[in-house]
Length: 297
Image (cartoon, rainbow, N blue to C red; front, side):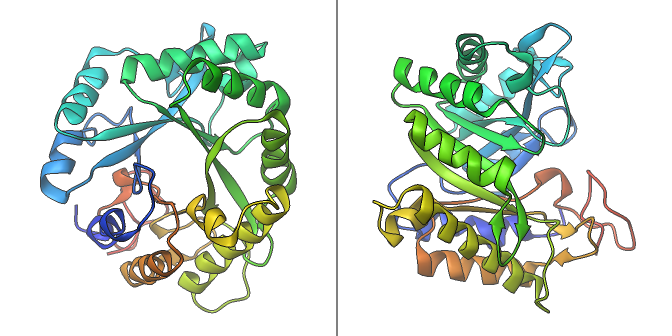
């Protein structure tokens, strides 16, 4: 891995004074076998937690599968997760993402969805669910399913990873803000609101400035959902997830931007940082947007 962003961001896990764990959990495509070496990542780079992307619905419908095709209990994947956890690592199960079918649309009731979530948590040994929403979902059904999981297992944390509309706006309305409103109305205990600070519009010259501005705008939206919480409480619930290297909109998130983001996150004591993705954390100068490299040197 030549891009080097991991080391720039990993320091946040030690320096942020928040009570929750994990605090830094970059995404990794579970189905990319050549990169799914969690123990190596921990030993070489100090990675203490990862977000496992993505548990989807598959051919059997409301049954979680990695990428919608690989069984959730695939021995090669689960053995690597077990070894990582035995070495002190932690994992977050992420659902949704850019591809279908979502578990949230494959399951026809809150109870069925809750059972699917529980299955994914059980086989991975995780107590963290991350819902990455990039397509229309049955919001109320989903949040009732998440609430059912938390009622059954109070230790389960829930994060929402949401698309950004603009750096001066925050997350989108239908697939972001309204999802959070519904979660609050249903009583879901929301641990992290994690804007995907990628592929959005900005007039700012610096992409690092734009990423931070988008996070601040999301923080402002969170005040409207949880007006009873203080600014610092909301920062402790805020995550930020940029896409490293070249983005589809032509912007480039560089190591200098990572350092800028870490400095801001330390100051604000945000609760969570991640990036998309560990699979892309290597250079490929002159390339386009690739799932396996950064697109830059």
